[in-house]
Every structure is written in structure tokens, then in C-alpha cells.
Image (spheres, rainbow over the protein chains, first blue to last red):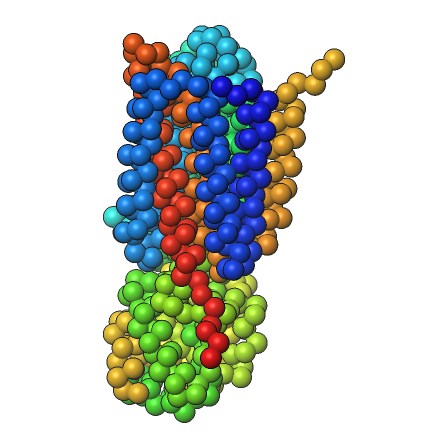
Length: 465
Length: 101
């Protein structure tokens, strides 16, 4: 048994270690150490919790067994998961945090004595409010993340699902949650608590279904943020410093990532959340115009262009992840380098389906991280580069974002691929990108379209070299 | 009059949001995916609540209404803790610098 004050100090240490874990991520060199701090913080939190209860009876053994069951499942997933599936994995993990928050809130509600929150049917008012917030946000995180997971995995269509009055209905449900919290506090009746959780699950689903597939970077970041706020809510209920600190850290981390993603698309947060962007109607409208001529080529043409180049910039996008082309791409770059060509990679903030998605895939393919650049770092270099190799990206290169105020992507920061002497576009067809906007770049004089699967084309270029 | 302990917890909470804000802005964009997986792992510190809930059952009846939710939460949080930290470790191990020749 350790005293309650000592316990609180240890939780504070855990919290500080978690801060250091995030701090470590400021550079790849310190990141591994950061992760170690995170593990240490978790270990301390779990061990002192055991010591504080001091109940090493049969139930303790069960706790360890359940912990190991969950742990082995987690470890198994962590080792087996392919890097291309990271967005789904993170969404799935978020749902677990959300559900765990709901479960902890439920057991605190059913057995408040164990947490010093009063007695059943007579729970402290503040605790009830905190519990309701934790449970509601947790439930929203859970069901929202499940929908995000299904969309990312392709089990559910990425197309936005909307119905009339959707936003009013959501607003009504949110007000209902607040009302239920009020009635719960005044009556202490468990019925209100269960209804509250059920409605929160529904809200989670309704919030995510109208958001389209390529807005997933925002959704994932947002759910990341929610899982933090849920943890903080439970932290207040349990009067646990480690949980409060962590919840605040994760909550603000997710919020910042959402902000960065929205800025990468020049859209407001509300615009994304209200959803319904990128329906197919827009694309059919813009395609009505006459067929403009495009130049298309094969792997030999591409290899020829690159052979004569002195610098090449690679622009990867979600298509690279889908085609699993990252390894082939790195081999191609190795070939280029052997021929004395300077190669760098340009990553748009919203490339892929989650923040940093492309960076992880390139790292997996052994691309050194100091060859990979962010938009602001590399955008001026396009003007001096001979070939831009666009693999699986589209909207993020579209010059229309700068020129046409009518376009839905107007104002979005883009990679200045158009300034390169020649542009190679690996794409399966001329279809417009997610935003439903035709890409001007396809019809330029200096653009060569390579119609093929990203991986196959890249492999063929290596052979033609 | 004494200050309600809630006020202290609220202070910790608000200050942590600010710490989080500045720390996360210093995270390099190329590590945003590991950032998400590690925040995921640390938010599973919610497991401490699950452990308290699970151990609250008495010895005659280990699995009662309330503790069962604790046990379930332990499994979920444990999946996240091990999965989150390990997958982060796996990702971070891949970030390499250019070899100097």
C-alpha cells in the first residue's frame, strides 16, 4: 500500500514522461528515446495503481491475465500490420480508447464506492457530470472511429452519406445529450445514463458518415482529439493526474493536427465536418467540355526523359499507397542516383489518408528522411528541376487552385509541379481527383501522362533504364 | 475557506493543454503518423481506471456487474498500449538518415 499523496506524485511523473514522449518526436533522432519515455510512464502508472490497491488476491491474477490477453492481441497486430494500413489501424485504436472510456465510466457509475465518488444512487454531482462527459465523448469517439475504420478499409464506401436536415438532427441530438446529463444529475436514474450513451453512439456514426474518403486525414486527427478529451473527462472523474495530463496532451495534439490538415486543404474545420464535399456531380459537370488533347507515353519515354535530367522531384500521393509502389519507387530512385541524378521527394500536408502517411511509407521503403521535404521547403525547387514524377497524387498539384476562384479547391496550397521542365504523371486514367476537379496539368505541353498502375509503371521504368 | 481540489485538477488540465499545444507544434511533420499512434498509446493510461474498477469486486464474486466492465476495459486498453507503443517503435525504427559515403 502506498499513500494517496505518493500515488499522486507517481501519476505526475507518468504525466511528465508522456510530455517527454511527445517532445521526442520533434526529430527522428530523439523519437525512439521519446517512445521509451512513454512506455516508462505507462509502466509506472500501472504498477503504482496495483500497489495503491494492494489487493493481490484472485482478482489480481485475473487482471494480469486480461492485461496479457489484450497485450498479446495488440502486439500481434503491431507486428503484422502492413504500413499501408496505418490509417485504419489508428482509427481502430481510437475506437478502443473510446470504448474503454465508456466502460470505465459505466463501472464508475455502477460501483461509485470503488472510486470514492459517493454511493450508488447518490453520486457526487461533479463526478456525475464528468462521468457523463467522459462517457458521451468516449461513445462518440468509438462509433465515429468504427465508421472511419470501415471507410478507410474500403468495407464502407468513401462517398459522403447525407440526408435532408442532417445537421439539425445532429444538433438536436447534441442538445438531447446535454438535457439527459441534466436529468441524470437531478434524478440519479441509470435509465438516463444508458440513453445518454446510446445517443452518443448514434451521434458518432452520424458525424462521420457525411465526410468523404479524402477528408479522412481531418477525421482521424479529430477522433484523435476526441479520444483525448474522453480520457480527460474520465481523469477528472477518477481524480487522476496522469489521465488529466494525458487527455489534455492528446486532445490538443489531435486538434492541432486537424488544424494543419484543414489548412493543407484551405478549408475551414466546419466545412469539413459538415461534409458532403467531393460528390460526383461536380466532376460530371466539369467533364462536359470537349475532349482536350493529352500526351501519353510509356515507360521508355519516361526513362528517356529522366536519363537526360539532372534533377528529379518525386511527388507521391494516396495512389502510391494503394498500389504499394513505395519499394519499387525507391529502387527507381536508386537507379537514377547511380546515373548521377539528384532526387528529392515532395510531400503535401494532406497527401494520403492521415497526417504523415507518405513519410511513413517512404521510410518503410528505406528512403532516408533527409531526402523527403515538406511543401514549404521544396516548392521553390520545382522551377529548377527537370522532371517531376507525380505518382498517385492529383489535386495537390492542380494549378487551378491558384487561378480559378470558382474552383472548390481554390486557395489550397499546391505543389508547384507545373514549374518543372517536364512532368510525368502516373495515373490509371484521366479521371478527376477526389475534389471532382479536372486537373489542368494533364493537358499541358510539358506533361506526359503515363497511364498504368503506379507500381507496374515504376518497375517498367527501372527496366527501360 | 479551502480551495476545492477540483480547481487544482482544472489548473493541471488547462496548463497541460498549453504544454501539449507547444510540444505538438514542435513535432516534425514527417513524424505525424507516429505522433498519432503514440498519443493513442498514452491515452490508454485510462487502464488505471479499468484496473481500479476490476479490482473492486470482492473475492467471493470477482465478476460482478461493475467489475466486468473494468475487465473488458482492461483488455481494450491493453490492446492499445501494447499495439500503440510497438507499432510506433516499428515505425520509428524505419526512419533513417542518409548513409555518409
